[in-house]
Length: 73
Image 1 (spheres, rainbow, N blue to C red):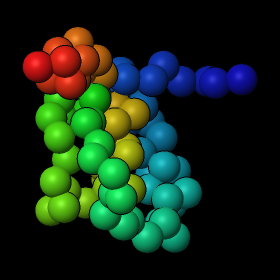
Image 2: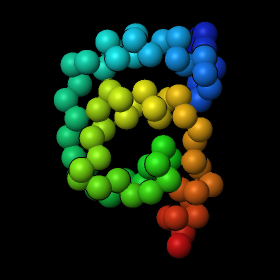
Image 3: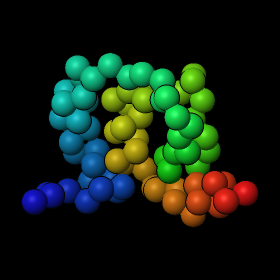
Image 4: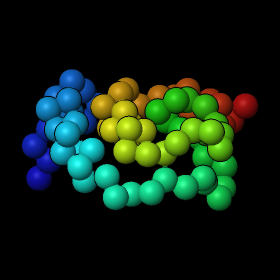
């Protein structure tokens, strides 16, 4: 069961736990183009997909419509 509301301020309560859980993950550049629902844009090689990225992905609003429109353009 999930005991917090994703994409809301409640995620801030587990920010440290998320950081610790992702601490050993080594980010790598995507091998295929990736359109981010966090940024609403294509990710470039300079965008680190580190623990901070994934925390923001869980905390921030999902930009699904913006990403979908961008992909269809």
